[in-house]
Image 1 (cartoon, rainbow, N blue to C red):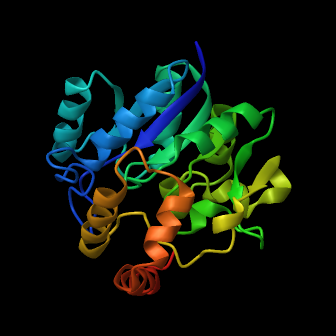
Image 2: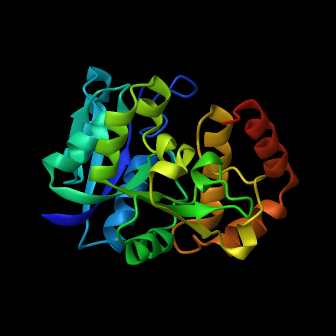
Length: 248
């Protein structure tokens, strides 16, 4: 049994940019491939799993998992909560790091910090100074952590589609029902809700590719990313527009 598993949520049927996680991003490598490689380079004790759907269109994701020798699970396309529960059960995972496959700049060091600080809470993540969990933003640098038993509790408490789709939303929306620990974001980014590095749209994708060409894997850290973005007015303009048009 693995105490902790890193579960990457991935599908190809995004409405705003179909196939975004498997499109060529860095030469011929996709965002999903980049994430898998990065996580495998940083984590060897934790199980890494791609949780995709039973939709035939996601056969491509399964093929990528087989190519990279990565564990995968196929579940309900819309009930992502149940997909996570079943994936964790299949691989005997007790504690879950939830990762979105549309975040090409995800920072493993901050995932490690979550794992190191996780105890018997129901939910652990980073937050802004106003207490907003970082998952509610478009920064795209961080993951969140919860427990299999907590997700099962959510499934028992609610059947609302919103909470079935967004997995952890019910937890931090009902703090009186759960043990929640929110860690402050690093100083350079703690109030930077103007940063958007997640990929939802074609403009996001194209901009992220440009930024990645400037950073690669070696310079993937907050200071370098923020400096690059702050020195490029075009990127900042695009980010603000995409944040406004794709508010969570």
